[in-house]
Each structure stands twice: as C-alpha cells, then as structure tokens.
Length: 272
Ligand SMILES: [Zn+2]
Ligand SMILES: [Zn+2]
Ligand SMILES: [Zn+2]
Image 1 (cartoon, protein in one colour):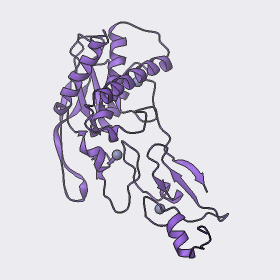
Image 2 (cartoon, rainbow, N blue to C red; image 1 turned 180 degrees about the vertical axis):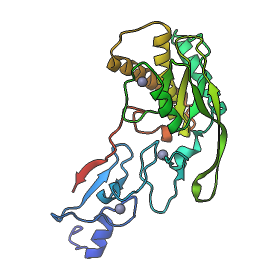
Image 3 (cartoon, protein in one colour; image 1 turned 90 degrees about the vertical axis):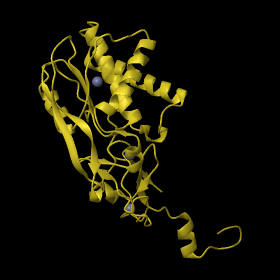
Image 4 (cartoon, rainbow, N blue to C red; image 1 turned 120 degrees about the vertical axis):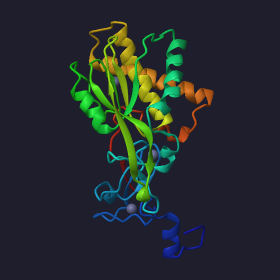
C-alpha cells in the first residue's frame, strides 16, 4: 500500500525486492520463505548466498564479487582483479620505486629514517611463498601474505616487466628475472605481491618497512602480535597521510580490507 493505493504485486516486487549485484536477479527466498542475502561490510555489495560456493570470483584486492556482466582480469597466479583496482595496479618492480621513495620519505618525516638501501621487489604469489619458506626466523602469518621483510640470502624471481593482457583478460606475457639477495645488513629485501592497487601496495610496503626498521635498529624480542600491531599502525598512518594530501590516485580502490588484517571471506549474513 502507498497511502490508500495498493501496489500491483509485480510493481511492489520491482520496487522493494532486493536484487543481487552479481547475477542481477531477485534474491531468492530461503527454506523459511525469507529473503536472505550476503553483503560486503564495506562496499555493501549485495548478493545471493549461493555465489559464495558457485565459483564466482572475488577481486583479490577489494574483495568485491565479479558481477556476471563484468569481466575481471586474471593474474597469472590465478588471482582476479577488478577493473577499478587494475586502474592503479602496480605491476612490476621498477614501477614501484617512486612509491618506495615516498614511503622512505614518510619514515624520514617521522624521524625514523632507514639509511640502508634495501631492495624492494615485486613478485608473484609463488615466489613470495617460496621466499617465506626460505626464511629462518619465524613469521607471524596472516591469512594471506602479501608482503615480506627478508633477512636471508636467497635468489628471488622478480616481476621485471609490466605484463600484457591478452584475450579473455588474462596475462599472456609476464617476464620475471632472478634477483640474488646479498646480506649487507639485517634486512636483505622487501617483497610485495605484484598487481595490487597503489594504495594497497603502499600500505603493505609501509607495514614491511616497519618490520625492517625494527630489525635494523635491533629491537628484538617483541612478541609477534605486538610487532604486527606496530606495523599495521604505520600502514594506517601512511594511508591517512595519503588521503590527507589527496595524492591517493584512486582512493576508492584503497580496499576495505584494512589492508592485511585478514578480512573475513564471507559477507555478513543479512536476513530481511
Ligand atoms: Zn545472485
Ligand atoms: Zn577490486
Ligand atoms: Zn607483518
């Protein structure tokens, strides 16, 4: 009813029955006859619960599900990236150096200058995992690792040229080169997963820089939780500084995911 005027059933449905942002259909009712949908806690993207199990891909950066009428790109390690995140994605090691300089300056501004020239390398997921295995000191694992501060001498395969995308939005040419890390100081390199948007890459880098700083300054014996917490604070401080200065080239794709604190893979359950 609208005032005294009743709705047609179909008009009412068209106006008030929630539609799925993924398949664009009306969200079906569950066994109890209630409309149940999931929604991403930040983006509020609404979708049928079934898409959590039917293989619908999520963007590896912002976690939004791929709507059926849109195509995400596929990185060669299987990750999917939405077009908004792709827009400012940093794809190779060289391309990341200006951001690295920004973050070094950010640390300097906090009176926490890192004097050592630590190599920063962008890598594929596989290379990141292998490097992590090769590190002797224990790491506090987050659900998904996207960056690593290394202390061992290893050979790391780094993404050295911006990949090209072919038909079907998949990478057809990804060039990697071996990079030999030598130990000049307590930290041999910082590795970051390639293909993430600038602000997310920067926040991971700011986080790893703090691990490096603590190691270089000889702060040992912090509990892993405390150390992770400190690093997360620095990541957030850098993001804040970017948003304040307005230089974040794509604030929308900074991702909801509190960068690397392991957001839940499931949307919150909403029943109406
Ligand atoms: Zn749906
Ligand atoms: Zn995305
Ligand atoms: Zn960490």
